[in-house]
Length: 123
Length: 343
Image 1 (cartoon, each protein chain N blue to C red):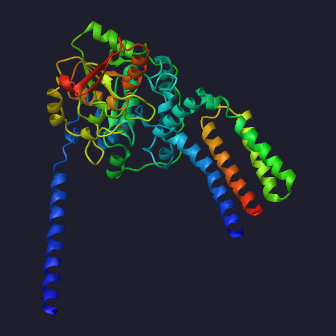
Image 2 (image 1 turned 90 degrees about the horizontal axis):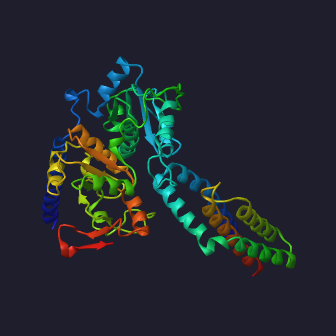
Image 3 (image 1 turned 30 degrees about the horizontal axis):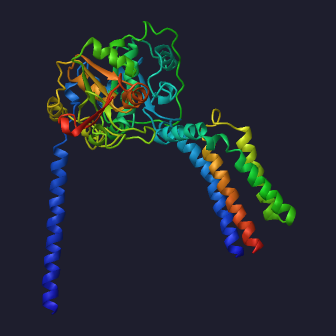
């Protein structure tokens, strides 16, 4: 189980590296850029997009709850990731960061992987 | 048993040798069938497509010549290798999403070229790994009024194949201040938006609206793009066979990335009424592929060709707002039973 947790941490690092890849793709591949731009504006214009800040907020509350319940490194990382996601979601915007929603999706994924790690450790 | 095995092995070996030889012959046949638009010995002053040898000589004879590498983005490939002295132009400098991926206003585009030292009288040669990107940027230079605009047939590959040297990194341009003429110098070559197209049709009802898009796009089976939700074509459009997908003009190109001699393709276009004697507006999704067709027809002496830059992207948006003014056809327009008009 310990090895699996380490494996998941490696997956997290790979997913974070995905941010760099997405940025590079956006800046150098026309089709990708146009598609990302199109879908990002679609998300922003939807109800889901306008309420999206609630997702990291809920995740932070969950992380806080788990950290208070039992303090260890994995739960602390979970809280930090939740806060990072929340900060990203509230401080940055699509107008200034074209891959805003892609990064949001990646941060959410990293958080969920960390949550799995925490739950695995708990069990 | 051993004998039978030996005979079968011999037969298989013979079959393999015969097959590989046949493949070689087929490959040789294919390469001998390559018919290029650009013939090194016959390049005329008013041609738009030139080869590497011509460019090499031009750079030697006229040091004012500006070579441009056109592509979307930061120019990663350009930094790895480019024609000596060439400048990178990001296609985002001449078009934006806010503008429906249409070419920006003439003053903004003029600045893009002035920054690279290009004025009205500067010979400009554009190349790219994507012929459509080269044609797109070359078209803007042509529309602005640059006297001599050329496209390097085959791009950097052709340059390297000719064994000419390349450089790495970036090039610093000396900006020019005065373009030397009003822009756009050739406004008649561009139909920008769907409203402009309707106006052009009103002015000349005989105007041929030629779609450079693939058959699947033309008949409304696909929009061709994830960012275009609806499929179809402006009503009255005819099929100018050129593309296999929404990202190529494969029917106009040889396998080595050079432009095909277009006699056969023009014959296919003629069946749809796309002929050199008419006013023809080429379009595609957002104006890239159509720019290539624009220059090929120009080179072949078609007098009244235009680029409908807005293309299907702009027409579809206009149709969503006002279907009766911007009607759409879905299907094969040659057969009334197979086409649906949305208006």
